[in-house]
Image 1 (cartoon, rainbow over the protein chains, first blue to last red):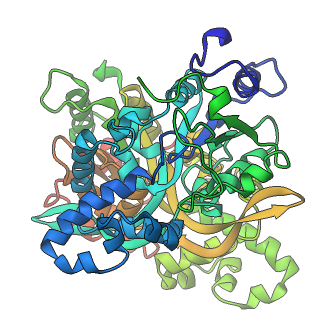
Image 2 (cartoon, rainbow over the protein chains, first blue to last red):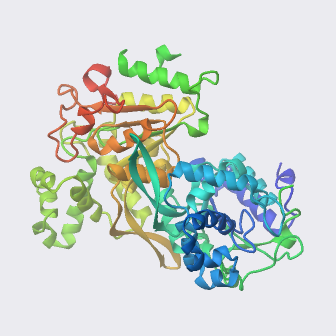
Image 3 (cartoon, one colour):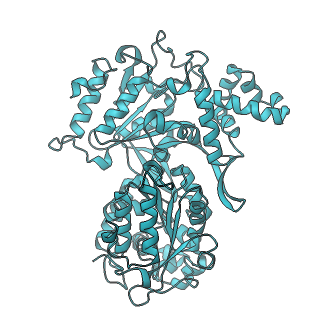
Length: 306
Length: 306
């Protein structure tokens, strides 16, 4: 029943574009029909599935990690960029630019096995509270997007996250919160190293960047991990533009969606000036590339999970 | 009905180990129960799911690609290692070692989009015939392994390929032949580059190695792509030993299987001396690492698909 689907989406062009697209690609008698194996949808995470203001959640987690590391090595408190993290100095962080700021985050996650990291991230996620929204970070996810993920799954889609966020940080909650298993999470990665500890093989996280999953690298990682061109993608920043264009460049029906944060009352209103992940080119050229812009203010009846 | 499962496996220790393992991890009342999301199985491809003698199938495909390239650039016929490919000179190829020989293969696959490569590989696979077995390459797959993949799927497992073979070559047939979708194929990769051609985004394959998915790199790629330690792995060479040990090092029930090619009558008998992918250490130390050795001669009632 399309009328009852996506209840937290207001009736309007965005909701109708989604319902119409899914109806066409799932109807075997329609020329736009796509067989289930090719119904691949890719979602950015920060700012697309959950809130990324005043900075991406992983920065808050990195501050907690850095506090633990600085207790052992106090010199970190005086070294940039770690000093900026520990002093909550958003201007200095933003001045680094997106990639350098995230790389500094990832460096605080090294020196443990991926299983140890997963346990630490889960403990943090279970107790940390967003400083502005005053709710746990995993409850800063968007209700309309949870409904969209469910709706796509019910229609035979396989949903992937393709985000600049850290692979293992997202894997610590993606299954429980989004219903997306670890193998469908693509993100920025640091390298791992095979080590034998007490006779058992462990994969150690090391402080060396694998890939920073942003902009064109998102499409390279889609090629590496998925091996098919998605038919639907959803983003919210210039970091997603390459992925949205890649999707729209395929033959047949394709849907590319861009969330515009224009709702200062219920969430935050920002785009060009958010230095940690600006939205400029994708917004200015959305129409040229056939990208549908979703307005949080206009298109969403509800913002956060209840 | 375990009695009717795996009909091409002879009753014996290998078949019983598989049936017993699957029974335990799928029984909610058993202490070894594993929830479906964690039932991850990883399979090597060459020599594990299909025949790799007298050399891996991708070498035959690379010869065909090289013939096409040499028509445009005849100097390739005089340059090593390409000369060895074109002259079917297995000794020279083997003397390069596994990684260098495969890297030369991958270099013949560059300069086209991943979608163009997929189409070329599919055309070749549809017509090429194995020179010794006189059947198409995709019919050089092992019937007992197709049954095992089906059996695991029916028991809630998600099967992945983790192979030194080229990612996109395997993706051209893995879904049709093994029922394994492209996103569950992990392999050696060359890099891709985002390009806009006639206004459309394409991912171009370039002649630069991403990773050679062998030995410890298999476990690094499992961490990158899957993000969980598998509970079952199946290999056939020293290139799989790191993966088999990684699986066996996890907590709870784990099954690691090693196929020994000891059947000169129905397939080939080889191990230590196969320079393109030797089996020495994994065979000598299987018992130390808790790896179950599968004898093709003893454990398989049938070898190839009918």
